[in-house]
Image 1 (cartoon, rainbow, N blue to C red):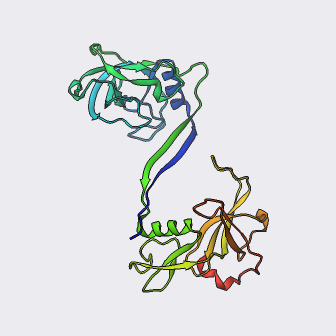
Image 2: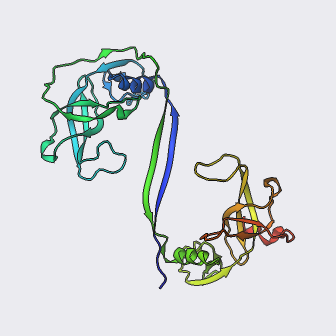
Image 3: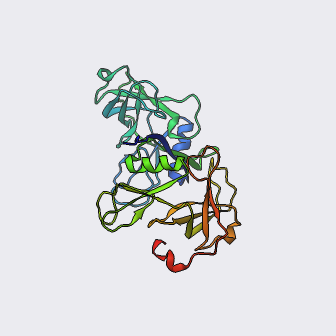
Length: 315
């Protein structure tokens, strides 16, 4: 039995967005050690503020300032913090209703252990030493002996010098991928400059890359078939936006390629030809770099273009 491969993978997408007047005021206020909420149509003070009433969906914008201390309404202990979380040592996730607010704010509570946390305990904001206008300007919450003093929200204009008008929210997923036996065999064959698919015993179609089962018939595919190495461009797109950490000059072409003997097209980059000369039916072959585990790109073979009828079912 062939070795089943695994690999650590990261999917990362930093999302950049502009801020409306309510969110801009809230984040700029955090930079200035001021917590702002917004008054909803029923008189409740919502913190963090929303741009629309959570009950009626009407636009709301009446900003108010609330206190920096509050009461824990519920909590959960986090014994093993992960990368990017507020604290590096074990902490509690808490919902805190700040004095003067009617809703709760989610953040971290720095506590020595779960026995030191309880619903109803008083806490206060620990401000970050350096603040930039982000939710991380609240470094965390910490236990407090300050009693609830009946603080009421006070109107605030929301105006600050140098307001924050946009944010970049990093989204990242770290995970270990295991391709399974079928794709492990496929990847191991690629390392030897061979491309293999698997044939369905029912419909007889050859799938590349293999998935271990026929997507049409639903039966296992365990017969390996070598395909290619040449193939035909069935369709393509021209890429004009340069991707981060990808050392390829734009514009370039990504295409679906039906390898000879395969009944499913795979996608790969086309090189060795000007981007505006790539076309459907173009015959191509793989180009391998030294030590590469998969083709770097496909280039024209110089053969006549394939007839449309020979690949129309694979578009």
